[in-house]
Length: 550
Image (cartoon, rainbow, N blue to C red; front, side):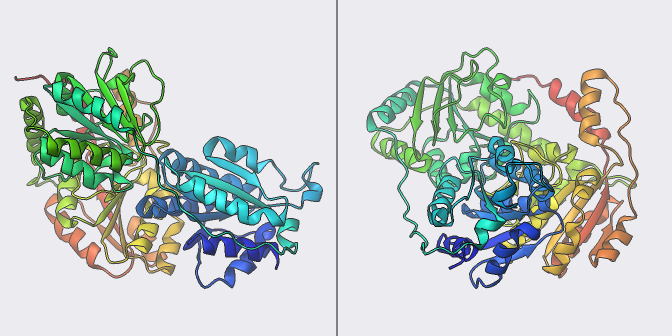
């Protein structure tokens, strides 16, 4: 068979369901082969970056990779931001690019560049297919690497002349392996350290929303009462309504939950990714006793030097601890500081729930109404900007993977294409994306993709006519900010031009009803909210003034 046909058959054997992308001349053979597939759906996007973000969200929600496709040269460079975002946020992804004929790769030639070397820093593995007979091994290896903890992006380049060659090779049958688990001896030692502690606390990271870890974490907390602080990407690892949920850390160096971390004599980190919230911010003196439990060994850092490490499948590690808890006398801890932290934050969340403002709306009010409008399993996606900081603190979750925030690579332009992918994975769930006016316009061309797919999504744009997060950061550090203002289109005319429903809400009392209407509409809807970012500086001051009362 032709090499490109074999490539597609290997992807089918791996259970790949979607490939998102923009075709070109050098991947034409692959596209012709893909068109014959009855198992893989190709989603044509309007930009390769949007394709990569769609593949990322598919991977985060399912744990399995999707493909994103670009041709050589500019098609490949357009992919790279979304690929880097996926890789740093631990989402499995297959990156497929075309390439010119191998007969011209050694010299100056039209659109030729070393694409594989470009992708190596932002993927787990990148390679060129130079021999058609190696396609089954390469695809099998690529999918295994993409899925293996910690998951990420893998790049495969298929030159146009290799795609046309004949081969007698056949796809390899995927064979899964069981992840390694920690030794009983080290788990016993960790359990002894836990029993000796008086004020333990859990820091749940990105790994807690993958591979069944959330279920075991909830059982652990039900049995011990130990409080859980989650990073931005671990929202929903425990139920927001559970007494031991201490909400989210990462907005700034200080928050109410920081008091509980300061007070802790043992910090158990679970699936913690240092790219999310550096330990220097919660362990500035490097003197905290830490148990590190994760799929991989801890990164070396002077502020993160664990007393012991439980390396292996995270859900199984927690199950092992739960087995020991069940056989031991009840553990007793002093968790008063944790209860105080939760109480303070819970009160904070509700302060502006009944706001009545006109002209602009406070972020706190928007997120209160959003939480009320969405069910436990509905999905909110956050773009990157000032709104992300508000979502991280004020929007809490009942279930894992119901609030998707990019927080490793932190790329703007993520929310709209991500919402399209989320609606493909879960067509029966409500999907709400929140973006700033800057981030939304970075991939606004995918509005056409959403219409073509009849995506039942709502995108809420927080309008402030500026790069609001940069202004916030500059104001905090320098007391002023540079010129960060810009103009915007007429949003409702933009929505109409693309065939979207459109709404503008400038009175807080109307927001809940409009949001409900938009979520119930068939097809994509745009909701524009003039946002009151005067609250940014007020929140910074309020967090800076936090004091302990115990």
